[in-house]
Length: 78
Image 1 (tube, helix red, strand yellow):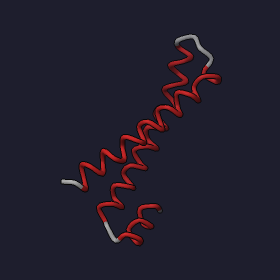
Image 2 (cartoon, rainbow, N blue to C red):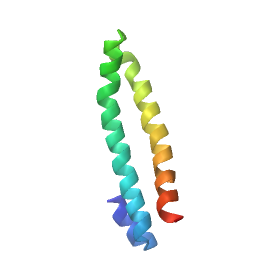
Image 3 (cartoon, rainbow, N blue to C red):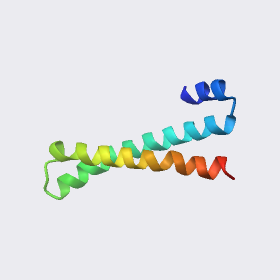
């Protein structure tokens, strides 16, 4: 949906594809971390309900920050 809005607003197909790919990758990373972080914390003997939110937020925010500029650099500057 956002990629369509970006395409209509800016008229740049490459930018809209970068936005769509960055959102998709960020959602996949969040889903993967949402499964693996609590399982890992439980295996290490920690309570996953108390501490998994911090790790999930850190993974989602940091990877989302790096995925979009990385894709934009690879796609739009070359």
